[in-house]
Image 1 (cartoon, rainbow, N blue to C red):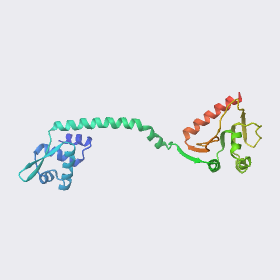
Image 2 (cartoon, helix red, strand yellow; image 1 turned 60 degrees about the horizontal axis):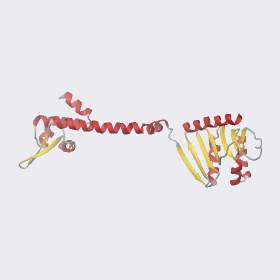
Image 3 (tube, one colour; image 1 turned 90 degrees about the vertical axis):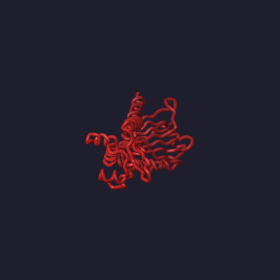
Length: 245
């Protein structure tokens, strides 16, 4: 019986459930009082165990006069119960395998954090975050003509002065009708409309990516993800190499 007790526990039975199930098989139909006494568990626990085993189809009750007696179903019902559990576990396993990626992101803290802003305040929010993060270097791809059509040029002066003050290096690929003015810590690769046509602003710094639409509805998105930021850095550097050529 000790071996069966261990086996039943491996199937998810509690100690009391295993004990009462095996005892009921051994002694046949019995009252709650008799089962509780012989299993050496309380009557409250015995009632709870009987209800659980009945739900699993492993126990049933019979009426004998005014008494209600409880008995374990045939051992074959246990086989049926185990087969059902195996099928349920197979389904659960598939669900776990399908969602394991979410747990990995959660475990390593890599689940992207996404913030969205609407209107012109969105760009200001991103500038504030860049200054708060204070990266050593940032990568930027921007259509300056589209940017200046939405925001006056002088709006960027305090922000740029603060970047220079903190010695934050910037590598940029920009589209601009006029020559880009030289600035401290600013390496720029200029492209014409014939080379590329885009109407957005992308900034990559530390583990963050900031994107702002410069056409239509003005929307800014800030994504915090080490993996995505690294991917975007590699993509930017490939574009930079192509621009040099």
